[in-house]
Image (cartoon, rainbow, N blue to C red; front, side):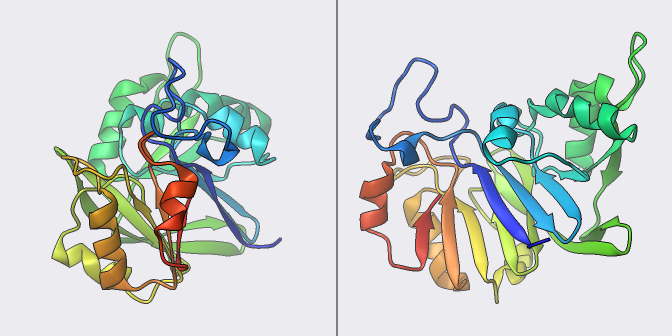
Amino acid sequence: MINKFTILGCGSSLGSPWITNNWGKCDKKNKKNLRTRCAAHIRYKNLSILIDTSPDIKLQFKNNKLDSVDAIVFTHDHADQTSGIFELRPFFWKNNKKIPVYGSPRTIKELKDKYTYCFLPRYGYSPIMKPFVIKKKFKIKKGNNHLNFTSFDVEHGLIKATGYVFEKVAYISDCNFIPDKSMKNLYGLEYLVVDCLRMKSHPSHYNLDSALKLINKTKPKKAILTNLHVDLDYDNLSKILPPNIKVA
């Protein structure tokens, strides 16, 4: 099996366009401006690992021809990262096995509070997931294969979210500040996938200027901007970026 990392969705919390058909400054004729909410997928040997469960997760699976999930890794508990969690029920039925779910202490607590039926028996329904609180370094295993992860805290407005590094790829979908103790994880990367909400500053997300400063400081071989608001048109943004930085 070829190892592959897929950005399933790169839109901000309302996607692009909004439910009101608001495209903002995006050219609606360009299909690259049609953005579902943030999520990603890792195919590593025989492992199929999902990062976050966006509200668009069913469409994302269908569009990318994904047919298995061995584990879910969550960045944080906000609705645009978690509200598709119930869509994963068929994988429990298919495999007759609880899906392992990984996250920070806060994230796991909030998931269990908000989506209790996924973790505890309710009204005749069996729980479909098994929670695991992550350490700074942890691994996800299947058979003789495993994938190593490094987790680190990032600031996301009023909460701490989690960034992850695996196989020289860093994924930070929601962030407005990275503490010094977390920055050490971001050097020597092949790919840095990072939040870039809009041009103007924002209290809980990187804007273009702060995303570029992070990229220039850490110098990954390639960087990919994600969590894009409707203010950011794919072509217009691509034109002003250097060759090593791409728009998701």
